[in-house]
Image (cartoon, rainbow, N blue to C red):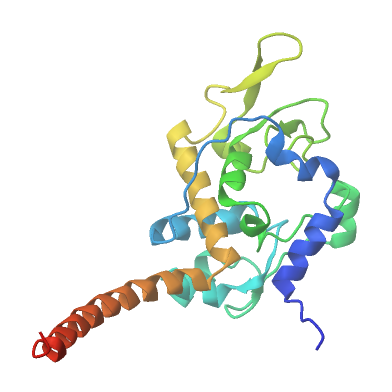
Length: 246
């Protein structure tokens, strides 16, 4: 029997085969990663993350294994609101979340087409993505004027810069740069508000990586309650059967 490779698994394999060496080493750059725990029960957070994603990310990064309709249903968003506020192309609510970016043009602009992000939190992990979105800093030597402490020599602009503002490195000497400082007044959000925005996007992308996970968690609560009740009745039945023996 031939082994079947699921599309999602194939995407993961292709990412690791074709990703540049510095991308694979991004998690071992020595940056002190800030802890992050996904909140899949926090529906408002994922709703906000969905809105931020379509406004700031979907122009370049598709979610080609996810449909608007499934996303709206899972996150409790009525279809008419999704069509009005979250779908900015001529796509229908049942369509996959693809980008209109020209792939050939993207190769010229970025060196390679921006990757699909459906599986990003499974290829990496939510903590990596959360820290990545928080650690862009000014670097005039880079093509887009920014670099990243989690993903050195990143080949994309800081698309959330108008929200976060600009960060600069604080260096102890010519070689040691261990901190990032925000340029005051350069972003529309406060540090706390931007942190929440990044949490929302990360929560949303964690959901997208395995949409059925949300439903499994919901069902899991009922399954556990059922097992508790069944256990009580089983115990009582066992005691009733064996009471005459003793």
